[in-house]
Image (tube, helix red, strand yellow):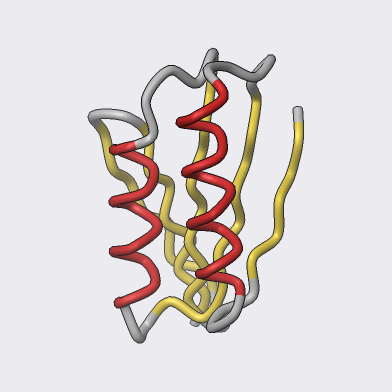
Length: 88
């Protein structure tokens, strides 16, 4: 059973698809704060039902420090779970 979780700022939706559970985390727009995304990545890492994470980035970039914090969190997460990044 694949459950695709879409996590948007302020909303959460899931769609059930046969297979394993994969999470989709979207980063949209200019990145000016990393707290929301770092917290979501930490939550997905702790969730044993999530077997992999798709990080969908549709952003022109942003402030250096928050971008670096998200990057560091993704590096840590990918040591324990597969992470695929889709850039838009």
